[in-house]
Image (tube, rainbow, N blue to C red; front, side, top):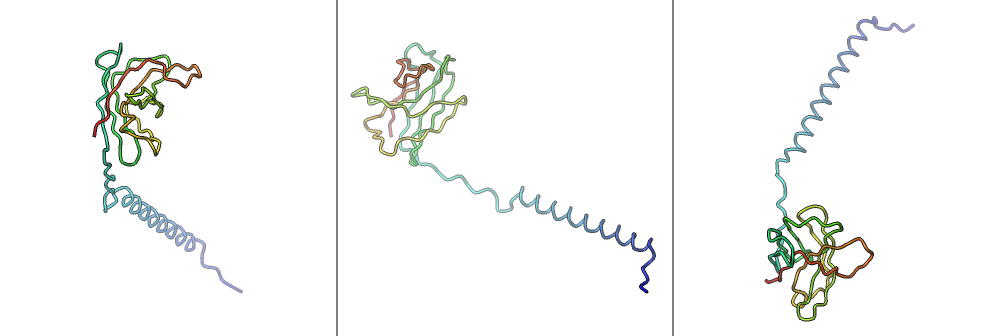
Amino acid sequence: MVLAPPPHRRNRWTRWAVTAATAVAAATIGVVGTLAVLDPAGPEPAPTQVVLASAALRAYGATPPDANGEARVFDNGRLHLHVANLPDVPGYYEVWLINPQTMEMFSVGVLGGESDELLRLPPNVDLQAYSVVDVSAEAYDNNTAHSGKSLLRGALTG
């Protein structure tokens, strides 16, 4: 016949063990969480991006004169645009590169609702030939051609 310890003694040990295990788990989670947030090594610095060309974008045509922006082409093939005070349009804003000699152009992408946009350029773009950055007002009309309503323009230099 096996004798069991008195019930009150077993319950006291079990309650103490549960309390101790809970305290150890909470302390461990707290330490790990703190280290993850504080990261003693600190954040890694952002990689530096080399600017290959840039353009000040100025109001064009009937666009209010306080509309402006900046375009920068990075060495990773991206075009960064920062725009301000664009007039409200019923459609959307599209970004173009234009060859000022031939007036040929192609769309680089669409500006979203923010003042900053990062667009990918085609890998074979010739920035010597397509040196003008244009931001136009476009309608939702299934027409992929430039609307003729340029809002901002600037010539890339660099």
